[in-house]
Image (tube, rainbow, N blue to C red):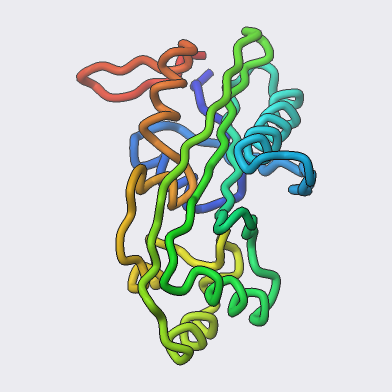
Amino acid sequence: MNAWLILASKSPRRYELLKQLGLDIEVVPSRVVEDIVRAESPQEHVCRLAEAKAREVASEYPDRWVIAADTIVTINGFILGKPKNRDEAMEMLCRLNGQEHRVLTGFSIYHLGKRKSDHGAVQTAVRVKTLTHEEMKWYVQTGEPFDKAGGYAIQGIGSFMIESIQGSYTNVVGLPLCEVIQMLHRLGAITISEFGLQIID
C-alpha cells in the first residue's frame, strides 16, 4: 500500500504547496464549521479550528497522517475571514488599505493509530500599499477575493497590492511549509534524504 498524506482542506493553494515538495496527497475536506468564539485570541482561534479539522478527518482515517490548517487575517484586533460578497470584499480591502496586518495560520497534524499529534501557529506581517477606490473595485470584480482570508491572494492578482512582508511567505498563501515539514519530520511522519521527502506509513 502506498503511503500518502491526507490534507483535511479543499484549498487548492495548500494542496499545491505540499504537492510541489513531491508528497503524495489525498484531499479529504473537513466538515468543521469555522465559528468564532469571542473569548479566544486569534492564535487560540486558528489552533482550535486546525485541531478540530485534523481530529475529525483522522477519526475516519486512523491509519493515515492527517494535516489541517486554518488561516485568518487580523488588523487592529479585528479578525477578517473570507468575504461572502462584493460589499464584504470592499469593506475588507478598505480596512487593509495602506495598513499593516497579520496573517495567522494554525496547523495540526494527527495520526490516531500511532497516537501522535502536534499543532502550531505561524504569524506573518503584511503591508498593503495605499489603494485607490478604482483599484479596489477592479480587484473585487476579478472575483479573486471571495475564497481568501482577508479578501486577497498574495500569490495571485492581489500581489500587486502587497508592499512588504515580514515572515513566512507560504504562511500568507495558506500553509507555513517550513514549520509544517519540520513538525512532520519531528513526529516521524516523513523521512528526508537525498532522494526527497517520503511519507512513513
